Length: 222
Image (cartoon, rainbow, N blue to C red):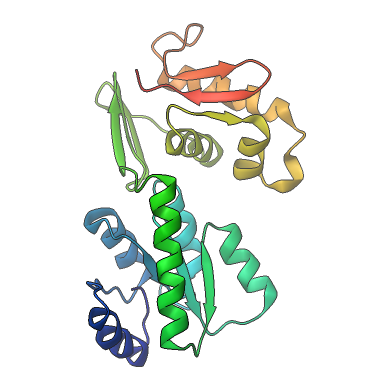
C-alpha cells in the first residue's frame, strides 16, 4: 500500500488483514520503489498524490522491471488522470472514496490476471558479461558500469522485461517513443545499433540483442 493519508492507511490496515492479506506500507514514492523491489509484493495499491513524486511516475518506474499488478486508489476522478495512470502501467483504477467490497473485488481480479500471466519477474538478471538491474536502473558489462542514454535505457528495459520473447517493432516504438511513433522503424535500427556497440562483445554478431527479421527484436538469455 502506497499512500500518505493516515485515514486510508488506517482503514486498509484493518480491512485487508481481516480478509487474508498481509500488508506492507509506504508513504512516499521513493519508499514504494524500494519496497516493491525488495519485498516482492503480489499486488500494489498506489495513490497518485504522493509527497515526493507523482504516482504515475512510480507506476512507470515499477513497470520498467516488474509486472506486479498495480491498482490505483486516488481522489483524482478526471478521465485524463485515469488514462495517464493506465498508460503508465496501472492495471486498474479505483476512485476515492470506495467501498470495501469493490476494493476486494478489484484485488481478486488483479491477482487472477497476474496468475494467468505467469507471475512476477526478477528485478535484476545476469547473462554472460552483462548484469542488468532494472530496479536500480544500473547496467554493467564485465563489471564496469555502462552509461546509457534515457532512450537506450527504455529500449533495453522493454526488451529485458520480455526476455526470451520476440517484441514487435510496433510495440517497442509505442512503449519507448510513444503511440505517435509506431511507424518510425528507423528509430529502432539506430538505437539497437547503439545498444549493441555498448553491450555486445561483437556488435556485428550479437548474442543477446537479436533481430527477428520483419517482426522485431528479442533479448536472448542463452
